[in-house]
Length: 173
Image 1 (cartoon, rainbow, N blue to C red):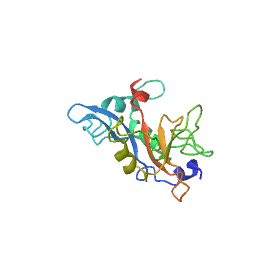
Image 2: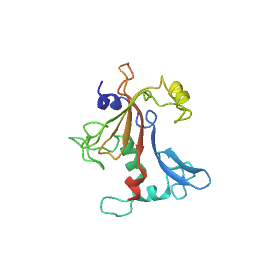
Image 3: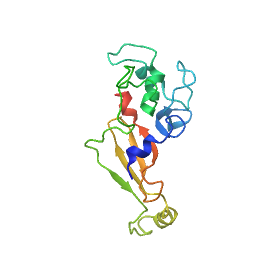
Image 4: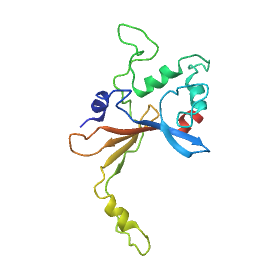
């Protein structure tokens, strides 16, 4: 399978689960959907933080504009405002939605295989049995600033993006 090809088949708005971090004292620190908030001036506790809204509402020169929601959607995979060879638009043309993966270590997560003893690792055998059939995943960082998790099976779902994470440090500096 080829993850780049599989990602291109997903709907940018409804077909991808992209998350980021949100520290909310009332709810604890948690992942929230990487989507534009209903009220950008006062995002709810389960929406992206105001710091991310502010960062997305600045152009490359740091000037505040009103394109934050369009930038976020572009990062999610919306190609509406992407330039083409015939039309110059707000954002550069991408060859695919999965951008280059350079100098990123690929990590495989399969079923637990360690032989830890419950006497020194209480509960490990229960955990190992419960996770014996979990779907193996491949994690890799890409130049879009996201950590992507792909289905690592040889089945028809292999190569499908399971989720992506936009780390807090990408926009909090």
